[in-house]
Length: 339
Image (cartoon, rainbow, N blue to C red; front, side, top):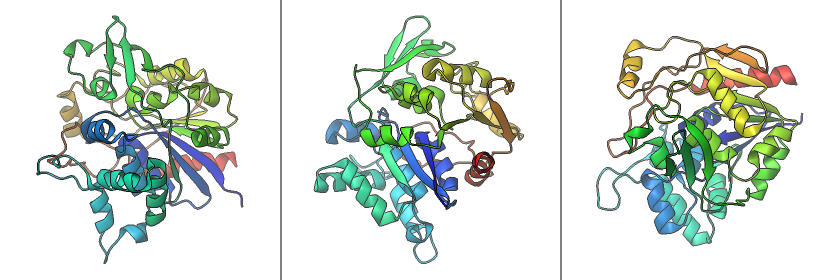
């Protein structure tokens, strides 16, 4: 039976969770297209000092798609832990992950980060492909409704200027004109049966891909079914006050097409977690979706494990996350209904 071409677009934890679930379905040909704008944390060092495409999202996708038997060692997930390990001491080492260093070392040996990713994929027997949206050195630029401009994904994601809070981003772009999509990524989007965006922060994860080159136009004109997975929480400095419909309308603004399907969580969230997010000015995204231009799929998508970040990790991380198996089952229910 012909495998269905599934293209996921995003970055960070959301893509990791989605791929971790989808890789278990044998009738799928998976391609993960990763953003190239992350310039925070360890990515900044690897971009500035090694000239690499930000490696962290690649690393997470490698681990997500890796063969479970390869990742295990004497009944433990030792190799998985090794790739995700973050050093918590040592000058120049603290905060860096072993996986990113491995990618950088192999890229230097082979003379190409793309070749390095391919070889690591073979080592881990990954079930799919991982591609960058572009191989060019680009930065994300956000213009806010009051005219303020912020350059750099990290400063958009974790604003240093509190004047940004509560203001909407009126325009998202990259800092170069004529940025070209990586050709294999362009081909993957064009040949997709399903294009899946999210879950992840609307601007710095999802739309960070769409504003590169003519990505939005390609998705608009694609015959593929377009699926959007709604984030669980708002993001301060990005989606303050946004409802679920606001997210969909913003997607339309950049793509010119509504998703065919919108997946959104409808299960209760622990009050303690909600209060934790309130301390950061973030809230559950209100479900005000109406099935007019798209189909809405509501389901229990919440993971049972509360995330605990490494003490060496300087970046803010989500504690509430989708469950990979639950999310994959919902996606596959859509896929199977369309076959």
